[in-house]
Image (cartoon, rainbow over the protein chains, first blue to last red):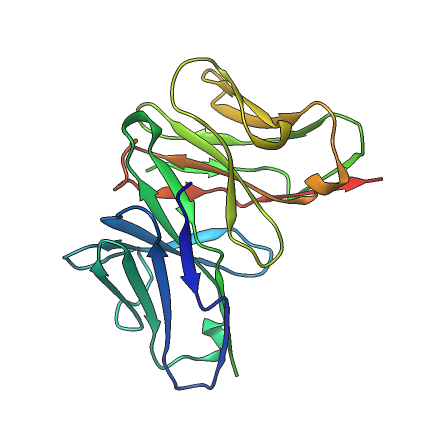
Length: 117
Length: 115
């Protein structure tokens, strides 16, 4: 079946540094991918929609200059957390939907636990 | 704009008993509804979806959900709970059934099954 791979699964970084998270669709092409953020014991909040070949669409309140999204190919989207701060520590999850007519399905990566110290 | 509500933060059930996790939704037009499960520090696993057709949808691991248009609900059910069902469950809605349409999640319900 379809698989979405997210890397790394966890990362610890120092304040002020940047961290890149990759999301790959392994056996299908995804023109659209979604990035979510999840705080402990809370729901997934949509951050942005990543569009292959064009700019990402950010949800209200999400800083586009801080959370850089690049959808470089039909199988890869990256989220870069720039100048990370401790409050950016969170669980980040990507999703890649696959169109199959009435069976469009959304597949999720395993998530990335980011800890900023 | 679409939204989904899960009124219970936690549901506790004894193993072997039936379980229900509640979900209500708000969306313009036809709703496309989903249930996902999340285990600690893991991504989401798809359980089931409602697109059209029968109101009772059967999914993975013995779970099912009933779409009720008049009550705008999509409650998740299982006839006999297992301890291994303990996890975080999310109801979700998609406004349009296309890959470009974003999925909005409910707040989540933690299901705890006691032996």
